[in-house]
Length: 335
Ligand code: UDP
Ligand code: MG
Image (cartoon, rainbow, N blue to C red; front, side, top):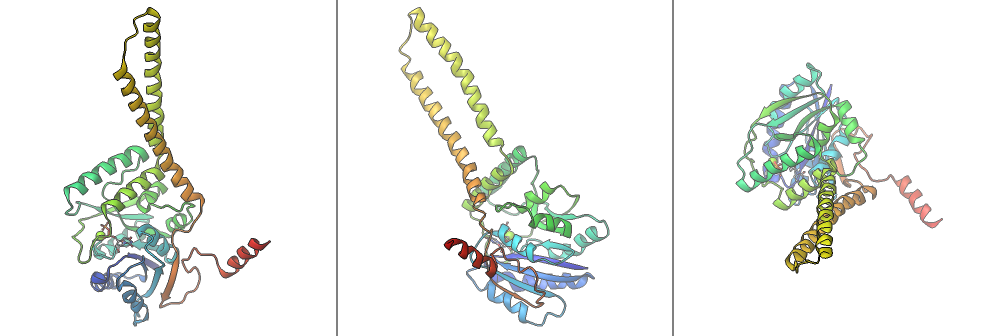
């Protein structure tokens, strides 16, 4: 049975050699056939050189494929590119910074093979040493995500084994914006968890800035739930009931002849209503933006180069149209 190992890589030159050693050691231990698919997600350091060297070096023990994306498309895109290329009966997605211990791979394979469990996930036992701001943010995010989508993602990581069936479903999902952890949970297959304590990063730096994390939180919540929109509707309804009451009271006062100046009330109401309307509009805008991105049907990534020790041919993991498709596109232009 063939097992594919998918490794998203962004500026990891400092730790790649150590990662490769650790992975080779634990792959050789277990008795399966492996292929390793390394996806360079637009690294600006020497990561691409290093991983493409691995495809020319004599790796008799397993096949290595190096895929280069044309720019940094983000980890989700890199994982998707790797899974599209994966030819195994199962695939394991693992980080290149050794924060996902390769020594757990044999245990994952055992659960999958002997236990017939389609998804085996690495679950973070304890959060890594992070600033308290990040920790508070993460807790808040997981709460909101669970509340809005019903999926509990606390401790979830991208360190996962997926059975072929699950991979096929995943790569055939129609959406462009993807959230690997969320979607695999959403698919609902049986899963088993292996706890691990993520060690600190061996080398290099985490590619996630606060801005990226906020953007991730926004898109994942929006793509998994329309609860925020419903909250706005409810707020609007409460506002409506409140203002109906206020209208009656105001008219009554006027008819009775004791209308008061009430200027501060007017200002407060205008400010309150105005900001609620703007907030609601902004939120709707976020959803429209997401719809806009999806309807454009742009590919999640573009492959600029691909090297492999085995040229199995087949699916090159590319979403770009083939030459014939391109030709027909152009001929349509001139008709
Ligand atoms: N990564 C990637 N593209 C990116 C950012 C990260 O492919 O834009 C890779 C990175 O090389 C690593 C994995 O994704 O193998 C996890 O990244 P990182 O360690 O920065 O994330 P964290 O561990 O903080 O979640
Ligand atoms: Mg990491």
